[in-house]
Length: 607
Image (cartoon, rainbow, N blue to C red; front, side):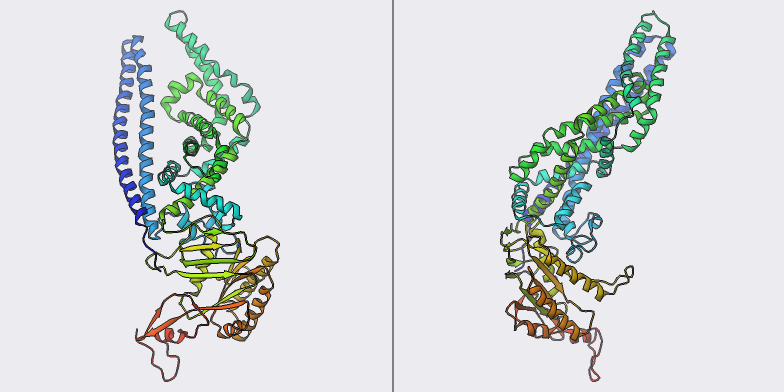
């Protein structure tokens, strides 16, 4: 059965994209208007200073602080307009990506390759990471920690109880697709947000040098300068007194200049990053989700958004020092850097123990957004049932490969029950054997991370998936592909001996293909016999008809096959799983189609 297109999701994504594009243009127009007002205000400040300087009348200077206040307000308003513009632009881009993803076209560059593990049980064989992978299909994370969490869920099956909690949470989250996209767009407000989190964690763990800590009390010296300035305007003290007091400001700031410069260089844009994370956690705190999985995390982030917004605001304020006008008019006169450092150190003392917990919940939320976004985008997918059987149990109807477009996807029924069982899958070249093994494996990975699957129904017990499908030679390790496969099979046997609870479910594609047919048959038969005695069951694909004939004599082996038919010199595949051993093979036909005559009296087919 071929699956229907998810038109409901496509309509939502198109509508959201149109709304976001219109809102982006509106915010951009506002941004430009405020920029003109800022320019006019700055020109007014310069004009007042020039008039003050030429006339010598101090009252002209009274307007400068007023225009400066207006300038700062406009600067904030312009920042808000830019943020709104960028937010709406992000939303439009997100919906573009979702529309492409519906057709399995992946526009985002992230492949998850950095999360690959050498010799992982199944990740390389099943396309978990890569240019066309399950990670790309699911990924709606925008921070490094969120991506790492999603990758860990893909690589490590959850316990049955946790799977059930995640399934309920994903269903809960999927009811609010706007919130999923708002979270993603907020995280994108600072493109490289994740890079600065590590620097922030390092700063939180550090301490301000003791000499600087002890002299932070001098931050109040501007009050003395203010009094001296008032006395100067009253004609009581000369102007040199004001200059001398400001010189003390410069001396005090000089003591902190090195530390502040290093901190500012390490935390460029950190204020924006933390402000974005604060916004994310605020959305999380105010979210309407009711699932038990979410409620247990929501408790851990109470007050986090306010705390992160506070420290993010402090870092942004520290960054104001990079504006020369601000540094001259505000930074020096108020000892701005010292006040920012005092606030940062106070925050660090109060909240440094909570940061790891907040980031952990944030990572979990992003990973859950990925599962929920996948469920929303595929409303025809189903929530599978996970049992607690200690034996291998898989029962699926119309099971489809998640990385094959819906219009081309052919789904099959599949069932298996019991430990020590092997399903032998025979078939001709290109008939779908390897694809079907990956279909079963990928869906087991999806099930055990809590995701929906492409099936009419799906139920299974917890299993440890293991595959040997793409073994390759290694020049670095001086190993042939055959030896690499033997090492892989040894790992399978070692895995089945581990007392880890769940049985192993193995997927072996054309095993021992690197040796002669006699040795291949004997080795495959011996391996399957050995696996029969283990806490394991699985599937083995093969071209070896003799292996299938032998399997038919054993009660723990079941034969299935894929086949092809030749009609008018053309090969046709139905990609359907059939019971029994394959009796039709197409290697000769394929060679003829490629122009290879396999017999002295044969003529190759024309191209």
